Image 1: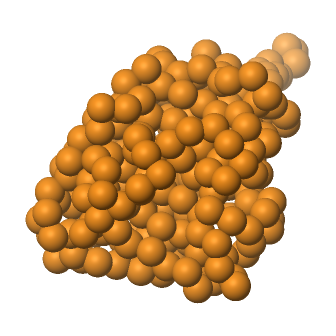
Image 2: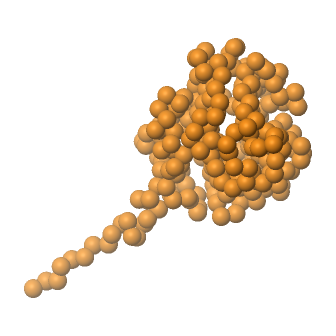
Image 3: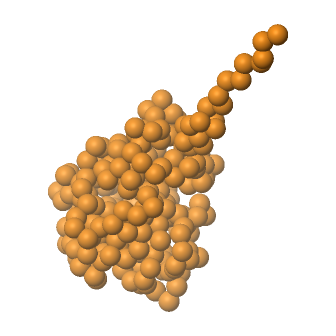
Length: 245
């Protein structure tokens, strides 16, 4: 009598293919057939050292990728070769760690310290008695700042910003999937002529750069505030649409 044939269990042999919430430890690519992959426009995954949705971006000297997260030291950044280009509707979601309290540039293509009146987008940490964030698009009338958010100053958390052009409360800010602020933009998005950056605001320097770490930063071409369940799903399982390269 033949012994029962025992087939290998792919979940044991290749767990990275079946546990999409697992943080990637090596190069990955987007599963473009996955629902999240279909709407992904930017995907900064430090272990790849490039944005895998844009196939673009480079770290500057001083940036460190350790344990699949990018460590920024107030002088390093990740820079794209073009400005932000999702202009009418989007969601930015990032998992971050802030190590200091100050005006920390996380995600921006602004071109001057006068952050409100210049074209482009920025998502930043704010200086305050407690932690806070700002989300700015185009001119100063489209600035949403929350200086007393419940975000932890230190430790890992997620921050998200959503935008829909011309919508009531078309700009929203979230920390750990909880809404902390909203405003109605009074004018349309004004695109920047500057290259997009992660880890700094408009230039390298301790007054404007991120001091901490980023595990991922993704942009989706939909305003996910209309379905908070999807936003939470991406925040909790951000690697679900990534597969080994």
